[in-house]
Image (cartoon, rainbow, N blue to C red; front, side):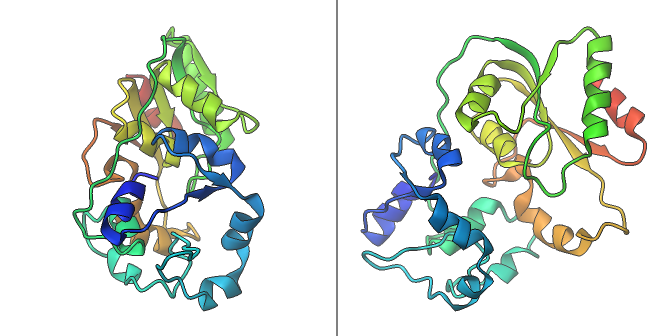
Length: 245
């Protein structure tokens, strides 16, 4: 969504953005009217044969899957995962065959009165998220410190979650797309990342250390953002005290 207009200008093609219905609120941040197609995207997420065989080409009328699963995309994504300071925006520019300096639009949030003290993003599709017990302990400690935390819920529509973020004084969450949007939009709330420490026993360790350079929330689009980073290891109380402090 952030690169849609750069795509139109560079390729001289009018793009139509297709999203799953649960993510329609993302397009609104960029004043785009998306097409919603849950079945199409569900197949794109799970069909490994499609990932390997589909010719992901750019031409008028083509269906372009903007995701690194699609290996026949004409972009050397393997090189992006090992370069330092490469952002996720660089990955998307490569997939869209755009110049490295193609401008990205920032998400725009409507001003919202402050209605929430502390919002905890406890439910997300981040990799890997922290266990539920951590978030329960953090919420309890925040209440003991006189704060008024509230948590998101899996059934909460994304637009309502965005509205909660816009009206919050402080948002605490893991590596996830919502935190990326908060950072890039320069929303004035305080932002704290609670990042799970990756131990040698972590089954995803190799893949995460290879992709983390462009997956890191605070530099999602190559911009350093004012974000608190708290690494959460086995000693939860210490990390929780650092967050509250």
